[in-house]
Length: 502
Ligand SMILES: Cc1cc2nc3c(=O)[nH]c(=O)nc-3n(C[C@H](O)[C@H](O)[C@H](O)COP(=O)(O)O)c2cc1C
Image (tube, rainbow, N blue to C red; front, side, top):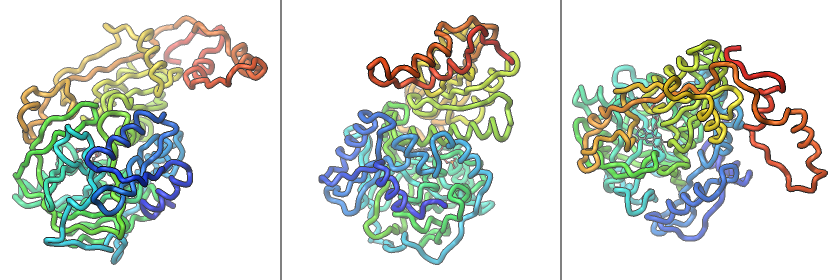
């Protein structure tokens, strides 16, 4: 069974040493973001932890960050599995959906604020790139909207810049599912009701950033992940079902055809974004728990919580489509590099079955979603796709650039990629409809072997394994052998050349 709410999950994190409390008073305008950034830059991935700021100058309540994506290990804990089973767990959750169940009330209704009592400025929303961002941004919203034709709800994470006591921007891209909904409301010239849940049980936060097919309610996938239905309550001022144990729910309406200036914001690419013109949410009600915990994702320059979350969710989706749905033979593993902001560079590990197979898989991956795969690299099973050194070795000596690199011109560019950004976007705010028209190209790299290869220049496994077994007798510091080394020993038995298509 899953976690009841964010609090129960955070207690587990703390017990495992993966959550640290900060009791010193901190400033939400610069200090929270700066401390969190130092954790992502200065603590190695396997040791990273979430933070709970308990004393925020001028605010009541606390702030948690890193709780879902401080590292892959933390991510796996949130998902209720281990790091080696993340993709299977995702695929199983999608295949065994459990619809949410409506209950009369829940902790999220402990405090209900309407009319003049609505005040977003009382929530400790940090400025994430101090001195550069346009204002405080809500980075962890689970935005709930409803298809006006089918009544099916969608949950997605779309950043929101606070504009005042009862207004926030909401960054809606047309190809995202909320963009489909909003397009329908705009065509009817009607406001779109929206409810934004913050600080939810981890299954909801994780599905909110994942690529769940349009028309499937993320709350049902979250139910599949937790093994029991998510309890939901009806909104106070909008006809939407919201998680009953959320820390906060912000309700309101997004009017049609209204755009306001938003940004800039430190982007997932590691660069500052430009100013945008986005729709606006007029807030009608805020409900929250007593002593609410405001949950935020640390984003911007990778590595970040955002790059961890998107990387795991998007790669799980690619793996599910290749392995579970297409049943593509030979495909083993998928990784999106975190240095590419977990979007630009997708790497697939596979054993190609025939000439051209690797390129075919690269073409499939590049076309799955405009959000990722500007570069798609395919490597053999002896390459560790999570190790830059290993991948670079394959790129260096298994690729003849003229033969093995394919450029696909004139396709939808990765959103917010400065290399393809229209220069006029940088100085002039543009409506979001115009931004997605930016064109770019894709690069597919077949870094698999295509002919019989010489033996690798390593001592045979029997010698190396013996040296490893007797290491203790040498009085040298312990060895930490990387996975790439183990893969080489496993896939290159002495006397055999490495042959493709077997
Ligand atoms: C921290 C964070 C912020 C995000 N911000 C946005 C955003 O502002 N706009 C957007 O379209 N997607 C954003 N995403 C990606 C979406 O959450 C993701 O594509 C998700 O699948 C959207 O849900 P949907 O598929 O139901 O549209 C963000 C992801 C993360 C982790």
